[in-house]
Amino acid sequence: MKQMDIRWRQRFEHLQAALKRLQHAVQVHTQMPGDDLIQIAVIKSFEITFELSWKTMKDYLKYNGADVKLPREIIKQAFSDAMLLDGQVWIDMLDDRNLMAHVYDEKLALMAIAHICQRYLAAMVQLHDYFLEKMR
Image (tube, rainbow, N blue to C red; front, side, top):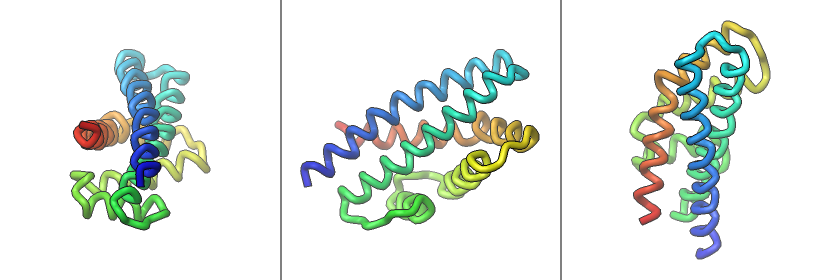
């Protein structure tokens, strides 16, 4: 059981670093919204932060006895366990992440960036704060 406790905590440390990079990318994007490289940085930072988010949730749920494996079921269980305040925004994140990972279309990319800036970042910060509280 101790190893599972350490695992989610280690993953959370990586999540914290990724979230800081995403926050920075979003901040720069607000200053230079038309910059293609910044747009790519926002999308890539989001993808990394999202991956670490659901994997941290998975490790934490496993530590607490839940056996869930796929991102969608992990999100549903995390919402059920009150880790997430808005389960739908996380399902939307999953859908956007899957779309961006397999198809690059500039319109879709701009839409995803808007979602990241307007909805997803706040949800990721809320999850971060949840885990930060559990670290104490």
